Every structure is written in structure tokens, then in C-alpha cells.
Amino acid sequence: MKYALSGLDLAFLVDEMQGLLGAKIDKIFQPEKDDIIIRMHRTGMGKVHLRFLLPSLVYMAKDKADAQKDPSNFCMFMRKRLSGARIDALEQIGTERMLRIRLQSKDSKYELIAELFGKGNLLLIEAGKVLTALHYSIQSGRLLRPKGEYMLPHMRPDIRTLSAEDIKKKLDASAQPTLVKAIAVDLGMGGVYAEEVILRAGLDKQVKPGGHDLYPVIQDLLHGPLEPAVILEGDKPVSLAPIKMRLYEGMQVKPFGTFSEAIDEVFLPIQQRAKTAAEKKMERLQKIIDAQSEVIKKLEMQIDEEQAKGNAVYADYARLSSLLKQINEARKTKSWDEIAQVVEQLPFVQKLDKKNKVLSVVAE
Image (cartoon, rainbow, N blue to C red; front, side):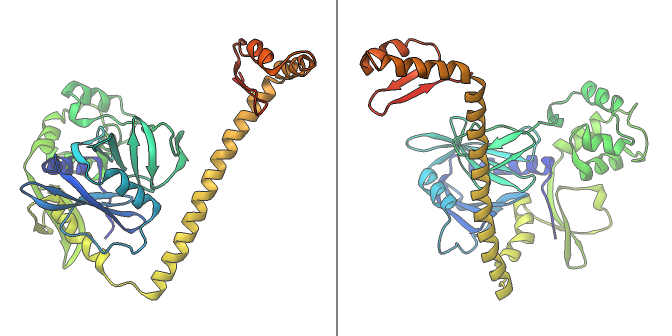
């Protein structure tokens, strides 16, 4: 079964995870490239495993999967920085499929951010800068690179903070052809919860967006009791739900104490199954491809940076060329110390390295 957490699914999970506050990180495992497990200890809970099964899942797992014999550089770096760190806060970013964990180690404060969209990602941030990431990329105007500034993606409205008037205005102004699509897109609730709202309101999902007061129904959905479950067809799981859903009435439902337990029931056995020789060979080949892709991405970033530098120098060529000619002419009668004293007074000159004969400038 394929399943991707929606923004509201994650909101329910984050409420569940508040018991992890104060937990101390013990060790980090990476059984597969996109499967990262953080083992931690929490007083009163014992050992707890927080599993990031990218691109679309995060939950508290019962047990860790088998660790790889040779940890990746990413895994080793995470262990070095986060072993012994404690969780200060655990929060969703808006209603996006993004989880932020604030961590305090002996020496520093970190943010661990899970992005549960696209290819998925896990990033370690310090003072707003990316220390490491599972994936580096350029997408939708966001540049994710080592030591670069971490940029949030475009944010959707947070349905939990919208007033009745806000919701009505957004639906009345919606360009979507149907009410169900307006709820999913303009209110950022996603398709499944949009259909649930329509069912609870007793409306046809094909009606036009305007003229409906859905605030009470939405509030009931957001603040109702948790009833986590795996939805089955026969013995086969077909979906997951953190709350009781009218959408699944008439279907077989297997209840669980927490939403994490429901997710674990479905996805842990998949991780534990034996792999065929062909699958193992494919994994080895995929690791080679991924490593080569990362090298290519880094080279492309370097090319872009060097190209930008070259363009800046070319645009300022006349002034730089004139300065170099003046320096060469001055060398006939003056020492490097005398030249540096004059040149470093220029506003666009950063430094003249007299020993290595290197001039550093700010090109406009």
C-alpha cells in the first residue's frame, strides 16, 4: 500500500509526538537511503524510535530496522552532531507536510527539518544554514546546498488559524470549479479531508464553491477525538486515518491506540521482508547512480557560482583593468606596502595580499 501523509495527517501526528519533548537522542540509523531512524530515550517511555520513511512518512516506530553495516556520510555526520542532544520542541510548519524538531546539544542549537513532499528530504540546520541534507537540489526557486541559507517553500494557508469569515471569503473567491476542489486547494486541506468535509456537511461535492458556511464542520473535524485506524479490504490495508471518517463507513476498520501504531502496522513488515538478490543488486546500482547524481549537482552549483563571478568581473572589466594597469605602473617606483596602503582605501577593494600578489575586490 502506498500512503503519503497529508498536512492534516501530520498535524494529528505532531500532537501525538509531544510526549517526545525532553527525549535524549541515543543513536541514528539509516537502513536504506530514504529510511532514517532516530533512537532516543525518554523518562517514563524508555527507548523510542522516530522513523523518517521518505518521501512521505514520519512516525514513532516500535522497533528499529536492521542498521546498515557501513553508515553513510550523512548518517555519520548526524550521529556526530546530534548524539546526546535533547528535543526542545517538535512542531509542524504551518499545515505543510514539514516537521521541525528543535534540538539542544552541549555546544549548539539545531533544527532538524523533514520535508514530506517531492522526493522527500531531511535537513540539519544551524543558525539558519544547512549543515547537511539527504538531498541537495534546486527546485521551484529554492536552492538547497551545503552551508547555504535554508529557504522555506511557498506556504499554503493554515486552516487551523482561519476564522469563519476567512474561510467563507476564500471559498467565495475560489476559481476552482467545484466546492470539493476549493476546500482541497484554497483551504489547503487535501483531497481526502475535503471529501470528508463535504460528507459531514451533507453537500454534493460537485456544487460551486461560493455561499457555504463550512466553519463548524471543519472545526469539528480538526478538534474531534482521535480514533486511529487502518482501513482494510479483506486482509489488505488500503488506507490510514487518524480520526473516524465517514468516507470509510461500511469498510473494515482495524483500530489502534495511536496513529503512529497504525502506520507502523502497515509499513514495518515491508521493511523487514527478505530482499531478493535482484533487489540487492538494484540497490547497489541505485547507490552508485545517487552518488554520481550528487556529484553532478554539486558541480552544477559550482559552475553557476563561478559563472556568476565571471559575469560580475566582466561587467566591471574596465574599472578592474584600469586598476591593474595602475598597480603594475606603480611597481616601478613603489613598494608593495606603499601600493597596498593606497589601493586598500578604494571602496571596491577588500584586500591586497602582498605575499601572494592577490587582489580581492567586490565586483558590482
